[in-house]
Length: 103
Image 1 (cartoon, one colour):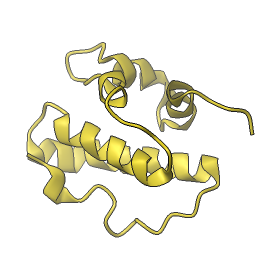
Image 2 (cartoon, rainbow, N blue to C red):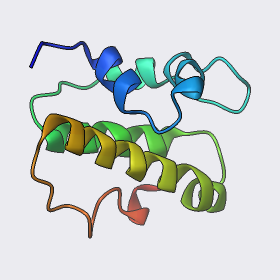
Image 3 (cartoon, rainbow, N blue to C red):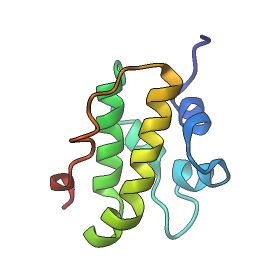
Image 4 (cartoon, rainbow, N blue to C red):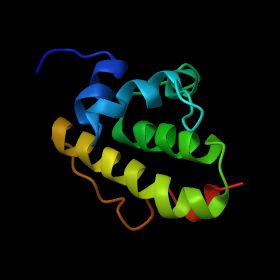
């Protein structure tokens, strides 16, 4: 498999590709910049990617209820798409992006 930038990996695996720029750049008032979060993380494994998405979800500027009901399912789906795309084994389903990460 060819080497992809993190941005391209995220673009390929996002559940709704039409909304990628909203998530990546935070281009709408209801989105948050994923590129800023990516700049603070090193990605060497799928666990690092899990941590990146958990940080994104935690820092997403919305109420805990909104994050749990609307944002978290989208992020979990995105994570699973990435795991599938990379052909990684994933045994984290039970504790992926735990609710305790919400502030």
